[in-house]
Length: 88
Length: 168
Length: 99
Image 1 (spheres, each protein chain N blue to C red):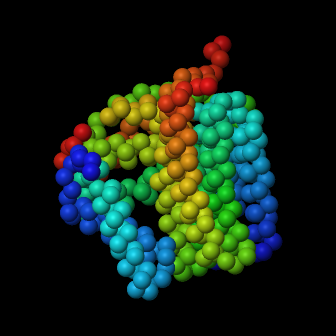
Image 2: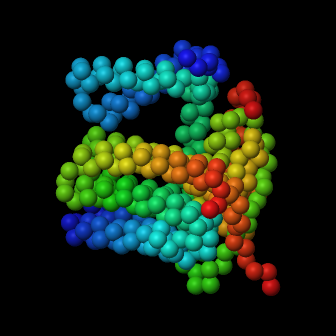
Image 3: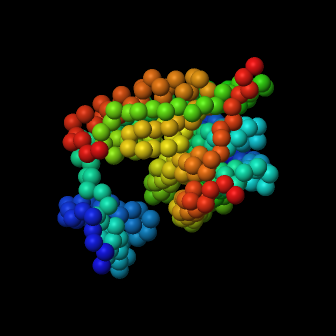
């Protein structure tokens, strides 16, 4: 079981790297915002798997809840700003 | 003090603060008196500050119908997820993105919100613009667009909201 | 129970990998947002259900389900906001070349 969880952790880290490619490469600014949104969803799952792996689920769940809410506020703020400002 | 657009309904205030208090208990997970008292104070304060936005209080019957609608929505999500996975993994990438303009017959704010959320949650279609009950939907190929054009989701939602007072 | 959790998490990983491939392969913002919504709706669901099964019946399982409901409510909002901002700022969706 521990081996499987470790495998999941490594795979999730690689997936975050793939999204990071889109964030760095993306032709428009919206690609970057979208990539950051994808990264944050992965990070929520990653935090929970870390919690299971180290047997401290109670602590990591609160962190991931906060991360989800902060991600909402940040993404909405960036989207609103870009909508007002238009394409750079 | 800013003027409120709508008068505060005390029932709505009470329900909202109770919902916030349940969340407080769930996240703090402690039953000491100081924590419970602080939670009660803060949930009433937050509900008071945010009151006056929407007087829409869903009745129990409506909650039950929405709850019964969710498994069907989940089945649709799985079906279109498999379709989208097939599209992405196909070597030739046979996608055909296009914008669809849909006019819905729904007469509720909450129903339009539920429709837009369901369309976005189903992979392959995304709500790009909402203006009262006109929706602009971006679909990734003809098969996904067909689900929006055929109004399958909308007829389900109209069925849920058929007994409510129209407010749009 | 462990076997069931492993099955769920493997299915979730499959969808996450497909979504990552889609984010790299698809041509423009609007199509990529479909791939991201694929992750959010099904990949995260299967992964979190697997984690909840591993955790067993406790207050933590309830919290995981709350995070799941939060994800299901918040992610469509974020996707819609991003796509609407892209559309309103004048970005044209990618079209297939007509022969």
